[in-house]
Image (tube, rainbow, N blue to C red; front, side, top):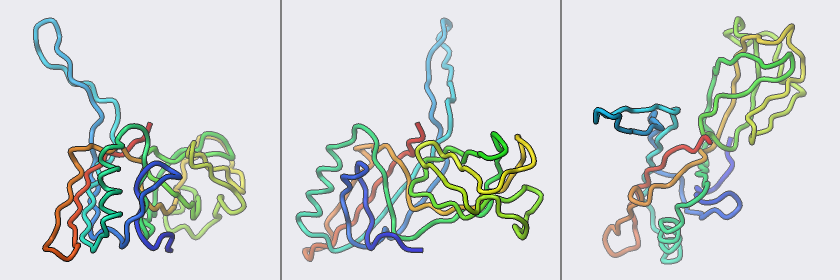
Length: 198
């Protein structure tokens, strides 16, 4: 599955485009937390949720205009952004419990440009039985799947398979670096982002 001939990053609808897919993308779990001190001066850490930390590296022959986009991006770190890549990534089995007989929600993991492949009963590990998603629809803004075939009851354990092509992100201005490689326009980009899952 292919969506882009290059990768895009920026505010949805106002992305900056860069030629070539990233040469490497690393995703690791990251904590959203806050540290405070109690009356005794001891540090207390409150964990709110987990969000992915995405590190992208890319080496390509960028033009001056494209380098200016990077500078603009480094100065535009407020609000929501997303990163879209060419190659679709797959989640083969995400285990969830249905909210009703006809709806189930994906885990909030900051993933973007999601395409649902199917929904099967959790007992159907090889996914050879009924695909309950066939004829259904998906709303990415709420991560809600409406099934084409209803389940036997609410609170049913299911397997969801889907693809995605990037992440909703928060950009750390200190996490964006780019360096010239020689004098031929080749640029080494390193960008560290945190998934923004609301």
